[in-house]
Amino acid sequence: MTLSVDKGLGNTIAADTQLSFIDGAKGVLEYVGFDIDSLARNSTFEETTWLLWNGRLPIARELADFSKQLQAEYEIDPRMMDVLRSIPRTASPMDALRTLVSALAHFDVEADDPSPAANQRKALRLVAKTPTLIANFNRWRKGKPIVSPDSTLTLAQNFLWMLTGALPTAAMSRALDVCLVLHADHGLNASTFAARVTISTQSDMYSAATSAVGTLKGPLHGGANQEVMEMLLEIGQLDKVDEYIKSKLARKERIMGFGHRVYKAYDPRATYLKTFAKQVASDTGNLPLYEMTRRIEEIVLAQPNIIEKGIFPNVDFYSATTYYSLGLDLDLFTCMFAASRMSGWTGHCIEQLAANKLIRPHADYTGPHGLVYQPVDQRSKPTTSSTSPSVKGTMSVTA
Ligand code: ACO
Image: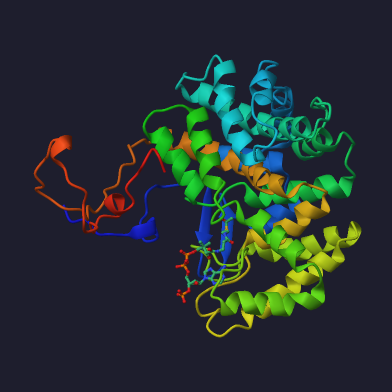
Protein backbone atom coordinates (compact mmCIF):
# COMPACT_ATOMS: atom_id res chain seq x y z
CA MET A 1 0.00 0.00 0.00
CA THR A 2 1.47 3.38 -1.03
CA LEU A 3 0.61 6.25 1.26
CA SER A 4 1.01 9.91 0.43
CA VAL A 5 1.19 12.77 2.88
CA ASP A 6 -1.63 15.30 2.52
CA LYS A 7 -1.54 17.65 5.47
CA GLY A 8 -4.90 19.34 5.92
CA LEU A 9 -6.37 16.62 3.63
CA GLY A 10 -6.96 19.24 0.94
CA ASN A 11 -6.22 16.69 -1.81
CA THR A 12 -8.02 13.74 -0.27
CA ILE A 13 -11.54 12.51 -1.00
CA ALA A 14 -12.68 10.83 2.22
CA ALA A 15 -16.38 10.26 1.53
CA ASP A 16 -19.07 10.08 -1.13
CA THR A 17 -21.92 12.49 -0.65
CA GLN A 18 -25.16 13.36 -2.39
CA LEU A 19 -25.89 16.34 -0.14
CA SER A 20 -23.87 19.16 -1.64
CA PHE A 21 -21.53 19.81 -4.54
CA ILE A 22 -18.80 22.45 -4.58
CA ASP A 23 -16.75 23.63 -7.54
CA GLY A 24 -14.18 25.77 -5.76
CA ALA A 25 -12.54 27.04 -8.96
CA LYS A 26 -15.81 28.28 -10.45
CA GLY A 27 -17.45 29.33 -7.19
CA VAL A 28 -20.38 26.92 -7.43
CA LEU A 29 -22.33 25.41 -4.53
CA GLU A 30 -25.34 23.15 -5.05
CA TYR A 31 -27.47 21.30 -2.54
CA VAL A 32 -28.64 18.05 -4.17
CA GLY A 33 -28.23 19.67 -7.58
CA PHE A 34 -29.95 22.98 -6.77
CA ASP A 35 -27.84 26.11 -7.06
CA ILE A 36 -27.41 27.83 -3.68
CA ASP A 37 -28.50 31.14 -5.13
CA SER A 38 -31.90 29.77 -6.20
CA LEU A 39 -32.38 28.12 -2.80
CA ALA A 40 -31.45 31.31 -0.94
CA ARG A 41 -33.94 33.26 -3.04
CA ASN A 42 -36.80 30.79 -3.05
CA SER A 43 -36.49 28.13 -0.38
CA THR A 44 -36.82 28.06 3.40
CA PHE A 45 -34.66 26.36 6.01
CA GLU A 46 -37.34 23.71 6.59
CA GLU A 47 -37.57 22.90 2.88
CA THR A 48 -33.77 22.95 2.46
CA THR A 49 -33.34 20.55 5.37
CA TRP A 50 -35.92 18.21 3.87
CA LEU A 51 -34.10 18.43 0.55
CA LEU A 52 -30.75 17.55 2.13
CA TRP A 53 -32.21 14.61 4.01
CA ASN A 54 -34.39 13.22 1.24
CA GLY A 55 -32.55 14.03 -1.97
CA ARG A 56 -35.44 15.91 -3.60
CA LEU A 57 -37.72 18.84 -2.93
CA PRO A 58 -40.83 17.96 -0.90
CA ILE A 59 -44.36 18.25 -2.22
CA ALA A 60 -46.60 20.63 -0.26
CA ARG A 61 -48.03 17.99 2.08
CA GLU A 62 -44.58 16.56 2.87
CA LEU A 63 -43.26 20.02 3.68
CA ALA A 64 -46.24 20.83 5.90
CA ASP A 65 -45.88 17.51 7.77
CA PHE A 66 -42.15 18.00 8.20
CA SER A 67 -42.59 21.55 9.50
CA LYS A 68 -45.12 20.25 12.04
CA GLN A 69 -42.75 17.49 13.14
CA LEU A 70 -39.99 20.04 13.69
CA GLN A 71 -42.33 22.36 15.60
CA ALA A 72 -43.38 19.47 17.84
CA GLU A 73 -39.72 19.01 18.82
CA TYR A 74 -38.83 22.64 19.67
CA GLU A 75 -39.34 21.99 23.39
CA ILE A 76 -36.49 20.54 25.45
CA ASP A 77 -36.85 18.19 28.41
CA PRO A 78 -37.29 20.34 31.56
CA ARG A 79 -34.28 18.57 33.10
CA MET A 80 -32.12 20.13 30.37
CA MET A 81 -32.59 23.43 32.21
CA ASP A 82 -30.76 21.99 35.22
CA VAL A 83 -27.82 21.14 32.97
CA LEU A 84 -28.02 24.58 31.38
CA ARG A 85 -28.02 26.38 34.74
CA SER A 86 -24.95 24.41 35.83
CA ILE A 87 -22.92 26.06 33.03
CA PRO A 88 -21.20 29.28 34.17
CA ARG A 89 -22.98 32.37 32.84
CA THR A 90 -19.56 33.52 31.64
CA ALA A 91 -19.17 30.53 29.30
CA SER A 92 -19.16 31.30 25.61
CA PRO A 93 -22.43 30.26 23.94
CA MET A 94 -20.55 27.87 21.63
CA ASP A 95 -19.00 26.12 24.62
CA ALA A 96 -22.41 25.98 26.27
CA LEU A 97 -23.94 24.62 23.06
CA ARG A 98 -21.31 21.87 22.88
CA THR A 99 -22.25 20.76 26.41
CA LEU A 100 -25.99 21.07 25.81
CA VAL A 101 -26.03 19.17 22.52
CA SER A 102 -24.19 16.37 24.28
CA ALA A 103 -26.61 16.48 27.23
CA LEU A 104 -29.65 16.07 24.94
CA ALA A 105 -28.66 12.42 24.61
CA HIS A 106 -29.43 11.77 28.30
CA PHE A 107 -33.06 12.70 27.77
CA ASP A 108 -33.63 10.81 24.54
CA VAL A 109 -34.56 7.18 25.07
CA GLU A 110 -33.50 6.50 21.49
CA ALA A 111 -30.03 8.01 21.93
CA ASP A 112 -28.28 4.67 21.41
CA ASP A 113 -30.78 3.17 18.98
CA PRO A 114 -28.75 2.85 15.75
CA SER A 115 -31.71 2.07 13.48
CA PRO A 116 -32.15 4.39 10.48
CA ALA A 117 -35.64 5.38 11.65
CA ALA A 118 -34.38 6.35 15.12
CA ASN A 119 -31.46 8.24 13.59
CA GLN A 120 -33.86 10.24 11.42
CA ARG A 121 -35.92 11.12 14.49
CA LYS A 122 -32.74 12.16 16.35
CA ALA A 123 -31.66 14.31 13.40
CA LEU A 124 -35.04 16.05 13.52
CA ARG A 125 -34.77 16.58 17.28
CA LEU A 126 -31.26 18.00 16.99
CA VAL A 127 -32.30 20.50 14.32
CA ALA A 128 -35.48 21.48 16.19
CA LYS A 129 -33.92 21.80 19.66
CA THR A 130 -30.61 23.49 18.86
CA PRO A 131 -32.21 26.99 18.58
CA THR A 132 -33.95 26.40 21.92
CA LEU A 133 -30.64 25.51 23.58
CA ILE A 134 -28.95 28.63 22.19
CA ALA A 135 -31.79 31.00 23.04
CA ASN A 136 -32.31 29.57 26.54
CA PHE A 137 -28.63 29.80 27.39
CA ASN A 138 -28.43 33.35 26.07
CA ARG A 139 -31.40 34.52 28.12
CA TRP A 140 -30.29 32.67 31.22
CA ARG A 141 -26.76 34.11 31.13
CA LYS A 142 -28.28 37.60 30.94
CA GLY A 143 -30.64 36.93 33.83
CA LYS A 144 -33.69 37.19 31.58
CA PRO A 145 -36.70 34.86 31.87
CA ILE A 146 -36.71 31.95 29.45
CA VAL A 147 -39.09 32.32 26.50
CA SER A 148 -40.76 29.01 25.65
CA PRO A 149 -40.75 27.97 22.00
CA ASP A 150 -43.86 28.70 19.98
CA SER A 151 -44.81 25.66 17.95
CA THR A 152 -46.87 27.73 15.51
CA LEU A 153 -43.77 29.54 14.22
CA THR A 154 -41.19 28.61 11.61
CA LEU A 155 -37.76 27.67 12.93
CA ALA A 156 -36.29 31.09 12.09
CA GLN A 157 -39.25 33.00 13.57
CA ASN A 158 -39.22 30.86 16.69
CA PHE A 159 -35.46 31.29 17.10
CA LEU A 160 -35.79 35.09 17.13
CA TRP A 161 -38.89 34.89 19.32
CA MET A 162 -37.04 32.81 21.95
CA LEU A 163 -33.96 35.05 21.78
CA THR A 164 -35.74 38.37 22.10
CA GLY A 165 -39.17 37.63 23.55
CA ALA A 166 -40.73 39.61 20.68
CA LEU A 167 -42.24 38.36 17.45
CA PRO A 168 -39.82 39.23 14.63
CA THR A 169 -40.89 41.19 11.59
CA ALA A 170 -41.24 39.26 8.34
CA ALA A 171 -38.03 40.89 7.08
CA MET A 172 -36.07 39.83 10.17
CA SER A 173 -37.18 36.22 10.10
CA ARG A 174 -36.56 36.11 6.35
CA ALA A 175 -33.01 37.42 6.91
CA LEU A 176 -32.28 34.73 9.46
CA ASP A 177 -33.93 32.09 7.30
CA VAL A 178 -31.69 33.04 4.34
CA CYS A 179 -28.59 32.69 6.56
CA LEU A 180 -29.82 29.30 7.75
CA VAL A 181 -30.34 28.12 4.15
CA LEU A 182 -26.88 29.37 3.09
CA HIS A 183 -25.06 27.61 5.94
CA ALA A 184 -26.97 24.31 5.95
CA ASP A 185 -24.35 22.17 4.20
CA HIS A 186 -20.97 22.50 2.60
CA GLY A 187 -19.34 19.28 1.47
CA LEU A 188 -16.80 17.73 3.78
CA ASN A 189 -15.93 20.85 5.74
CA ALA A 190 -14.02 20.38 9.01
CA SER A 191 -17.04 20.09 11.33
CA THR A 192 -18.92 17.76 8.97
CA PHE A 193 -15.78 15.65 8.70
CA ALA A 194 -15.62 15.52 12.51
CA ALA A 195 -19.26 14.40 12.63
CA ARG A 196 -18.64 11.71 10.01
CA VAL A 197 -15.49 10.48 11.78
CA THR A 198 -17.43 10.14 15.03
CA ILE A 199 -20.45 8.38 13.53
CA SER A 200 -18.16 6.12 11.49
CA THR A 201 -17.09 4.47 14.75
CA GLN A 202 -20.78 3.52 15.19
CA SER A 203 -21.03 6.07 17.96
CA ASP A 204 -24.36 7.91 18.29
CA MET A 205 -25.81 10.96 16.57
CA TYR A 206 -25.49 13.20 19.65
CA SER A 207 -21.79 12.38 19.98
CA ALA A 208 -21.30 13.18 16.30
CA ALA A 209 -23.14 16.50 16.66
CA THR A 210 -21.07 17.34 19.74
CA SER A 211 -17.83 16.70 17.85
CA ALA A 212 -19.11 18.92 15.07
CA VAL A 213 -20.02 21.83 17.36
CA GLY A 214 -16.57 21.72 18.95
CA THR A 215 -14.94 21.74 15.52
CA LEU A 216 -17.08 24.55 14.16
CA LYS A 217 -16.07 26.80 17.05
CA GLY A 218 -12.54 27.47 15.75
CA PRO A 219 -11.80 30.86 14.15
CA LEU A 220 -10.51 29.19 10.99
CA HIS A 221 -13.96 27.66 10.53
CA GLY A 222 -17.26 28.91 11.98
CA GLY A 223 -15.70 31.30 14.48
CA ALA A 224 -14.68 33.73 11.72
CA ASN A 225 -18.05 35.53 11.55
CA GLN A 226 -17.67 36.80 15.11
CA GLU A 227 -14.12 37.91 14.40
CA VAL A 228 -15.30 39.82 11.32
CA MET A 229 -17.77 41.76 13.45
CA GLU A 230 -15.17 42.41 16.15
CA MET A 231 -12.87 43.79 13.48
CA LEU A 232 -15.60 46.10 12.13
CA LEU A 233 -16.40 47.42 15.59
CA GLU A 234 -12.70 47.90 16.32
CA ILE A 235 -12.26 49.90 13.11
CA GLY A 236 -15.31 51.94 14.07
CA GLN A 237 -15.87 54.10 10.99
CA LEU A 238 -15.47 54.12 7.23
CA ASP A 239 -12.60 56.60 7.07
CA LYS A 240 -10.47 54.39 9.32
CA VAL A 241 -10.85 51.27 7.20
CA ASP A 242 -7.98 51.93 4.79
CA GLU A 243 -5.32 52.45 7.39
CA TYR A 244 -6.49 49.54 9.56
CA ILE A 245 -6.66 46.97 6.76
CA LYS A 246 -3.53 48.11 4.96
CA SER A 247 -1.44 47.95 8.12
CA LYS A 248 -2.86 44.54 8.97
CA LEU A 249 -1.92 43.28 5.53
CA ALA A 250 1.51 44.87 5.82
CA ARG A 251 2.01 42.86 9.03
CA LYS A 252 1.01 39.76 7.00
CA GLU A 253 -2.01 39.22 9.21
CA ARG A 254 -5.09 37.51 7.87
CA ILE A 255 -8.26 39.43 7.29
CA MET A 256 -11.09 37.44 8.83
CA GLY A 257 -13.89 36.55 6.44
CA PHE A 258 -11.52 36.18 3.49
CA GLY A 259 -10.14 33.04 1.93
CA HIS A 260 -11.43 29.52 1.85
CA ARG A 261 -9.83 26.11 1.60
CA VAL A 262 -12.06 25.09 -1.29
CA TYR A 263 -13.16 28.29 -3.03
CA LYS A 264 -10.51 29.96 -5.10
CA ALA A 265 -13.24 32.10 -6.67
CA TYR A 266 -15.93 34.22 -5.02
CA ASP A 267 -17.77 32.16 -2.39
CA PRO A 268 -21.26 31.79 -3.98
CA ARG A 269 -22.89 32.14 -0.56
CA ALA A 270 -21.19 35.52 -0.15
CA THR A 271 -22.40 36.62 -3.59
CA TYR A 272 -26.03 36.45 -2.52
CA LEU A 273 -25.43 37.56 1.04
CA LYS A 274 -23.56 40.65 -0.09
CA THR A 275 -26.70 42.11 -1.69
CA PHE A 276 -28.94 40.79 1.02
CA ALA A 277 -26.75 42.11 3.86
CA LYS A 278 -26.97 45.59 2.37
CA GLN A 279 -30.76 45.50 2.49
CA VAL A 280 -30.85 44.17 6.05
CA ALA A 281 -28.28 46.75 7.19
CA SER A 282 -30.19 49.54 5.47
CA ASP A 283 -33.52 48.45 7.04
CA THR A 284 -31.97 48.41 10.51
CA GLY A 285 -29.87 51.60 10.39
CA ASN A 286 -26.58 49.71 10.04
CA LEU A 287 -25.63 50.82 6.53
CA PRO A 288 -22.34 52.42 7.73
CA LEU A 289 -21.16 48.97 8.88
CA TYR A 290 -22.08 47.48 5.54
CA GLU A 291 -20.19 50.26 3.75
CA MET A 292 -17.13 49.39 5.81
CA THR A 293 -17.31 45.77 4.65
CA ARG A 294 -17.52 46.90 1.03
CA ARG A 295 -14.45 49.09 1.46
CA ILE A 296 -12.54 46.25 3.15
CA GLU A 297 -13.37 44.03 0.21
CA GLU A 298 -12.12 46.67 -2.25
CA ILE A 299 -8.83 47.07 -0.39
CA VAL A 300 -8.17 43.35 0.07
CA LEU A 301 -8.97 42.47 -3.53
CA ALA A 302 -6.71 45.27 -4.78
CA GLN A 303 -3.67 43.72 -3.07
CA PRO A 304 -1.02 42.28 -5.39
CA ASN A 305 -1.41 38.50 -5.93
CA ILE A 306 -4.47 38.23 -3.72
CA ILE A 307 -6.81 37.20 -6.53
CA GLU A 308 -4.12 34.85 -7.89
CA LYS A 309 -4.05 33.21 -4.45
CA GLY A 310 -7.83 32.82 -4.66
CA ILE A 311 -8.59 35.06 -1.69
CA PHE A 312 -12.14 36.43 -1.83
CA PRO A 313 -14.77 37.18 0.81
CA ASN A 314 -16.30 34.03 2.26
CA VAL A 315 -19.80 33.51 3.68
CA ASP A 316 -18.72 34.73 7.12
CA PHE A 317 -17.77 38.15 5.82
CA TYR A 318 -21.30 39.23 4.96
CA SER A 319 -23.19 37.07 7.47
CA ALA A 320 -21.50 39.04 10.27
CA THR A 321 -23.27 42.33 9.51
CA THR A 322 -26.52 40.48 8.83
CA TYR A 323 -26.50 38.87 12.28
CA TYR A 324 -25.45 42.16 13.87
CA SER A 325 -28.30 43.95 12.12
CA LEU A 326 -30.69 41.38 13.58
CA GLY A 327 -29.52 42.51 17.01
CA LEU A 328 -27.67 39.29 17.87
CA ASP A 329 -24.81 39.29 20.35
CA LEU A 330 -21.46 38.75 18.67
CA ASP A 331 -20.75 35.51 20.47
CA LEU A 332 -24.02 34.06 19.16
CA PHE A 333 -22.97 34.35 15.52
CA THR A 334 -21.23 31.00 15.38
CA CYS A 335 -24.17 29.42 17.21
CA MET A 336 -26.41 30.56 14.33
CA PHE A 337 -24.06 28.75 11.97
CA ALA A 338 -24.27 25.63 14.17
CA ALA A 339 -28.08 25.75 14.25
CA SER A 340 -28.11 25.73 10.47
CA ARG A 341 -25.29 23.26 9.87
CA MET A 342 -26.98 20.79 12.24
CA SER A 343 -29.10 19.80 9.24
CA GLY A 344 -25.98 19.06 7.18
CA TRP A 345 -24.14 17.31 10.02
CA THR A 346 -27.02 14.97 10.75
CA GLY A 347 -27.68 14.39 7.04
CA HIS A 348 -24.03 13.42 6.59
CA CYS A 349 -24.20 11.07 9.60
CA ILE A 350 -27.17 9.25 8.06
CA GLU A 351 -25.36 9.10 4.71
CA GLN A 352 -22.16 7.83 6.36
CA LEU A 353 -24.04 5.06 8.20
CA ALA A 354 -25.81 3.95 5.02
CA ALA A 355 -22.45 2.78 3.63
CA ASN A 356 -20.22 2.96 6.64
CA LYS A 357 -16.50 2.48 6.71
CA LEU A 358 -14.48 3.49 9.76
CA ILE A 359 -12.62 6.71 8.94
CA ARG A 360 -9.11 6.16 10.11
CA PRO A 361 -6.25 7.83 8.19
CA HIS A 362 -2.57 7.45 8.96
CA ALA A 363 -0.09 9.78 10.59
CA ASP A 364 3.45 10.16 9.31
CA TYR A 365 5.55 9.40 12.39
CA THR A 366 8.44 11.88 12.56
CA GLY A 367 9.84 10.99 16.01
CA PRO A 368 12.81 8.84 17.05
CA HIS A 369 13.02 5.03 17.01
CA GLY A 370 14.77 2.41 19.14
CA LEU A 371 15.22 4.45 22.33
CA VAL A 372 16.26 2.54 25.44
CA TYR A 373 13.85 2.79 28.37
CA GLN A 374 15.42 4.22 31.57
CA PRO A 375 13.74 3.85 34.97
CA VAL A 376 12.60 7.26 36.20
CA ASP A 377 15.24 7.55 38.98
CA GLN A 378 18.02 6.99 36.44
CA ARG A 379 16.96 9.72 33.98
CA SER A 380 18.97 12.90 33.77
CA LYS A 381 17.52 16.22 32.64
CA PRO A 382 17.77 16.43 28.85
CA THR A 383 20.33 18.98 27.71
CA THR A 384 19.42 19.09 24.04
CA SER A 385 15.90 19.47 22.69
CA SER A 386 14.47 16.64 20.65
CA THR A 387 13.29 17.12 17.08
CA SER A 388 9.90 15.75 18.11
CA PRO A 389 7.36 18.57 18.69
CA SER A 390 5.63 16.52 21.40
CA VAL A 391 8.88 16.17 23.31
CA LYS A 392 9.88 19.81 22.77
CA GLY A 393 6.65 20.97 24.37
CA THR A 394 7.07 18.82 27.50
CA MET A 395 3.99 18.95 29.72
CA SER A 396 4.34 19.98 33.34
CA VAL A 397 1.61 19.77 35.95
CA THR A 398 3.24 22.56 37.93
CA ALA A 399 3.46 24.97 34.97
N1 ACO B 1 -6.22 37.20 4.59
C1 ACO B 1 -5.04 37.42 3.98
N2 ACO B 1 -4.33 36.44 3.37
C2 ACO B 1 -4.85 35.21 3.42
C3 ACO B 1 -6.07 34.92 4.04
C4 ACO B 1 -6.77 35.99 4.64
N3 ACO B 1 -7.93 35.80 5.26
N4 ACO B 1 -6.34 33.62 3.92
C5 ACO B 1 -5.31 33.08 3.27
N5 ACO B 1 -4.40 34.02 2.97
C6 ACO B 1 -3.15 33.85 2.23
C7 ACO B 1 -2.12 33.18 3.16
O1 ACO B 1 -1.40 34.13 3.89
C8 ACO B 1 -1.30 32.42 2.17
O2 ACO B 1 -0.40 33.32 1.55
P1 ACO B 1 1.09 32.84 1.16
O3 ACO B 1 0.89 31.74 0.16
O4 ACO B 1 1.71 34.08 0.61
O5 ACO B 1 1.72 32.36 2.44
C9 ACO B 1 -2.30 31.96 1.10
O6 ACO B 1 -3.38 32.90 1.18
C10 ACO B 1 -2.85 30.56 1.32
O7 ACO B 1 -3.26 30.45 2.67
P2 ACO B 1 -3.50 29.04 3.39
O8 ACO B 1 -3.57 29.24 4.86
O9 ACO B 1 -2.53 28.04 2.87
O10 ACO B 1 -4.90 28.65 2.83
P3 ACO B 1 -5.89 27.60 3.47
O11 ACO B 1 -6.69 27.06 2.35
O12 ACO B 1 -5.18 26.63 4.33
O13 ACO B 1 -6.77 28.51 4.43
C11 ACO B 1 -8.51 29.57 5.55
C12 ACO B 1 -8.12 28.69 4.36
C13 ACO B 1 -8.07 28.86 6.85
C14 ACO B 1 -10.02 29.73 5.58
C15 ACO B 1 -7.81 30.93 5.44
O14 ACO B 1 -8.16 31.55 4.22
C16 ACO B 1 -8.07 31.86 6.61
O15 ACO B 1 -7.40 31.77 7.64
N6 ACO B 1 -9.10 32.77 6.47
C17 ACO B 1 -9.49 33.64 7.55
C18 ACO B 1 -10.45 32.91 8.48
C19 ACO B 1 -11.82 32.73 7.88
O16 ACO B 1 -12.39 33.65 7.31
N7 ACO B 1 -12.37 31.50 8.04
C20 ACO B 1 -13.70 31.17 7.57
C21 ACO B 1 -13.62 30.17 6.46
S1 ACO B 1 -15.19 29.95 5.73
C22 ACO B 1 -16.02 28.94 6.78
O17 ACO B 1 -15.50 28.16 7.53
C23 ACO B 1 -17.49 29.08 6.74
